[in-house]
Image (cartoon, rainbow, N blue to C red; front, side):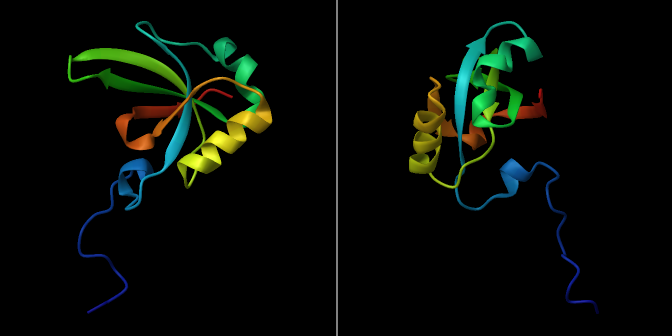
Length: 102
């Protein structure tokens, strides 16, 4: 038996596979899909992603622009302040369909 082979499949969604919470900066949320051009003001922080979330269990889908993952809330806040961009620091786990826009 190969003990290096996992006996359960690993989720391809790396955000869901993390055991400890990771954090992102949410730059904007919109009831309509966001575009890559909307990410330009936030590019100083690094890679920007589009993502979806359901708001407060209302089944209302929101489209968001978010940053890369940060290991802690404090690290995300520090990056946001250093890049001089506005946003909200939230746990990555609330988002789905995360795709790069820049």
